[in-house]
Amino acid sequence: MNVIKTRLTVGIILCGLAFSAFAATAEEIALRQKLAATGDKQAQYELALAYETGDGIEKDDAAAAKMYQRAARQGHADAQANLGMLYQEGRGVKANLKRALSWYSKAAEQGNTYAQNNLGRLYFYGYGVKQDYQKALSWFQKAAENGESTAQKNLAYMYAQGAGVEKNMPIAAQWYEKAARQGLVEAQAEIGFMYDSGEGVAADAEKAALWYTQAADQGNTIAQYNLGGMYLDGRGVVKNVEKAQALFELACKGGDEDACRLINAEVVEQPQQDFIEKPEPEFQPQQ
Image 1 (cartoon, one colour):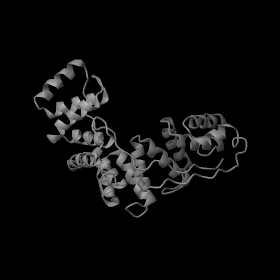
Image 2 (cartoon, one colour; image 1 turned 135 degrees about the vertical axis):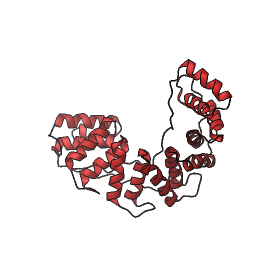
Image 3 (cartoon, one colour; image 1 turned 60 degrees about the horizontal axis):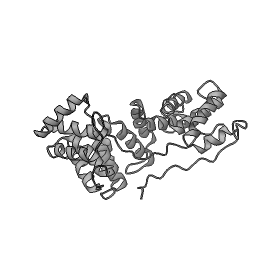
Image 4 (cartoon, one colour; image 1 turned 120 degrees about the vertical axis):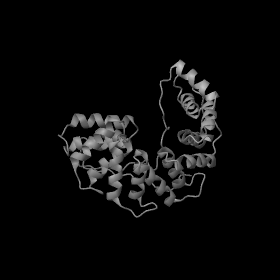
């Protein structure tokens, strides 16, 4: 087939919840309700988390927001980060990007890496604040250096696109690989592409196949497509048309149109036929 699908389409991504897990039994929930009523900020945070996730209690975003607010006002960084996300997404509260920015900022200043990443994302796209790639880069860098995989991926993306910093594919590859080693599927697919194409790193088909495999196992359709192509060509792996077909079918089920064409034998029977690659996504802010 000899055609590598263009790089990952995901730009700057958001971190999930900041967690502080506890055994959410009925007894533990009742205990935290009592402690929260006395003003215990950790209990307020953990109760909010239970309400948000529906773990041990009926899911209730509004109740989660109220509890996060109580803990956040007492300076609980994880509560501030999660409250910022609720305001950004409009869950349990009316969407308000300026309030999201405010709470993310408070948590980020305390070193919360989830908030640092999400604050960087607001600056990158200009959500609730004037767009500022330099501030975005700075917050991603802080979180990435503290091991936050999503921020590592986002920092890599900025270096790959040359957004707010001089384009540097080797540095981008280093950050993608750090995130990939932590299991971030988008980074695994991206570093697989870079090893496959020799962009930012020395081309290495075997490493490409290894990273594509990890991303494909997590359901990434681009990795499934590209890994399928490697099995079809016997590049970096032992040639196996049946495995290639299975991977193309998975990618097709995930919505990949090129893979759907392949399983209809348009290219499997004519391996030298080329596709026009899809253009890379713009990193400009979404409207």
